[in-house]
Amino acid sequence: MEQEFPKTFYATKERVQSFTKFLIFDDRGTLWLSAGKLRFGGKKSSLEMGDVISVDLVSQRMNWVTYLIVNLIAIIFVGLNGTEFVQLLALLIVGNAAGILIGKSTKWILVRFRNRSGQLSEAYFADARIFGWGGLLGGTRELFEAIKENQRKTLKGSE
Image (cartoon, rainbow, N blue to C red):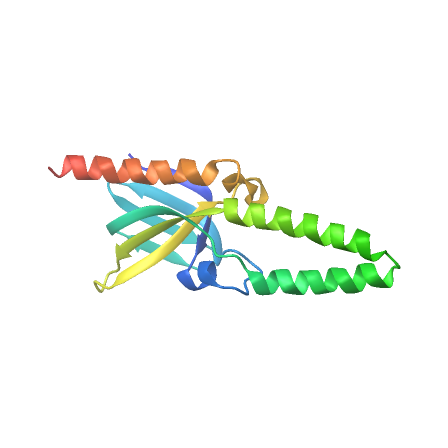
């Protein structure tokens, strides 16, 4: 039985590990699960993952360069509007704390698999529902559990 997840983010290792990402994903599309296989189809890319080695839930790397740029823009914009230093400092502290909490709470599903040529590859997936906020509301964990269950059924069936 095939399961379909039509609103899924896909990211490469380079994107997830980047310090400078402005977009957190490379593509958005559908992830299909069937008999131990994973298949992703998006607007820009497609992946066939038949020989899945492992599936893990991981945190994304903080994009510190983006935070620096946003902080500098905030300092310039708010500073030009005559806001006092204490208000500016409070805004930066609250804004950065919220951003860091959200960033640390954002999870990705890391799928390690052998591609068609037998090379070890990695792909990252997350729930893209609710304009990308679905992952923070448990959607990525649900997708992770569905992938793990798909793998368990496949291993159990091959014994």
